[in-house]
Length: 367
Ligand code: F6P
Image (tube, rainbow, N blue to C red; front, side, top):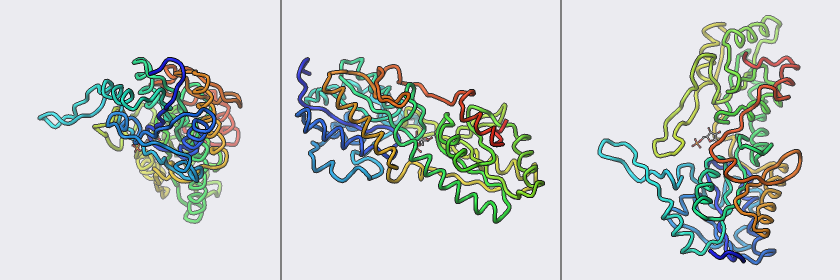
């Protein structure tokens, strides 16, 4: 890799997809070609493309007309961490992991990539931080519907997911009211309650349950009964997939054995709806929103934010500002070292104003 002028970059999207990935690929590729005179290679399926040496040259036509498209034209993988990559199974059927970083470095050198733009969440940034330690120049762009990356107030994709989840909650609100039911709606977000808190507030949910505040079943049930006694014969509950009962455990949907982060949460809404039915005799139903929250076109805000982040990444390439990730803080785009973001999650602080706002409008926060 040359020390001064860079000629060729790679771009990858890693981890779970979200709306806005294509908007970043578009601006990075266009700015790199037209303003910096660089060749751009699109790496397929995140770090898997570097492990398997799968990438293709991107031209202006390849990134035309993709701004509004959901998902990622490059593909992604949330299983391909080069430092901990599943290479097969042992005789007892257990997944065997190996560090394949050397292979990744070989492929980067063979393709003459002078720097890599890594668009992803904490898993992708920890993969990038490992590469940085091996001398690869990386630039990071923060994505995730969970909004749980350190040092950034927002990740792109989050606000679109809030919008999608709010629309779903609104729809469930009307059927809850017609049937006089308790409707428990489960949102994604892993261990962070940002998505549930914002969509819960936006939809006027009566109860919002987030991982940061373990729920007290008696309080949740009392809220449902109180509403019913007041003549409000339904209750809308927004619950995070990572929520748990006080003194209880998170509900795990499945273990993905070949993933470096194998736990997939899911099912707490079913547990909570059954608990409420049993305790209150109110008819209760659970809905898991699932991957609908990750799909579809980004809303205008995320198109602009993703473009801003991608433009910042291009600026960092131009300025040779290596190993930094773009962040959005106090209304402005800036950057922080990738290493400071790796392997960490930003959860909702208990003194977050959104929690106080929810309580002020009479929402039960589950406690
Ligand atoms: O991190 C994004 C996310 O959608 C989480 O909210 C969720 O827990 C997880 O990914 C689901 O992962 P998968 O797509 O592997 O089911």
